Amino acid sequence: MDSFAARLNELLDDTYLNIMTMEEQSVRSCTRLDLSTSEFHLIQVVGRAGKEGITVSEIADTIHVTRSSVSVAVNKLSRKGFVTKSRCSNDGRSIRVQLTRQGRLADAYHRYYHRQLFTRLTTEFTQEEKAALIKGVEKLNQIFLDTIRERD
Image (cartoon, rainbow, N blue to C red; front, side, top):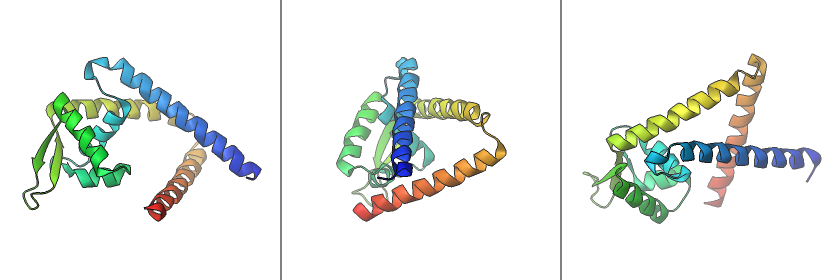
């Protein structure tokens, strides 16, 4: 591994761990919701789908996990009152997942947390740094997505 790759690996590892630590701290500060970070992320995916909801298969494809793992997580969130499940009208085999009122509140809290965090972070960058960062992260994310698709 060349020095650039080694340093990038180190930075991405550190960044990932720091983001996860901040998310865990945020989750712990909101104990009344009784949600894990991964449950918040699943709620976020369902929330992005809007009122129509999203199928278990679509969730699995979005977060790159198995359908059975999503089914287990959705069932848990359903028992906790954050999502509802219903059969798709056009395909009775598929399950459509939608947020309940409680799920929408949890999603709004999570989105608010991210807005606050990234609003604060962006004040530390110049316009040029912001543009370069966005371009670099977009390219990095595309490389990661291409790698994931190659492995599927």
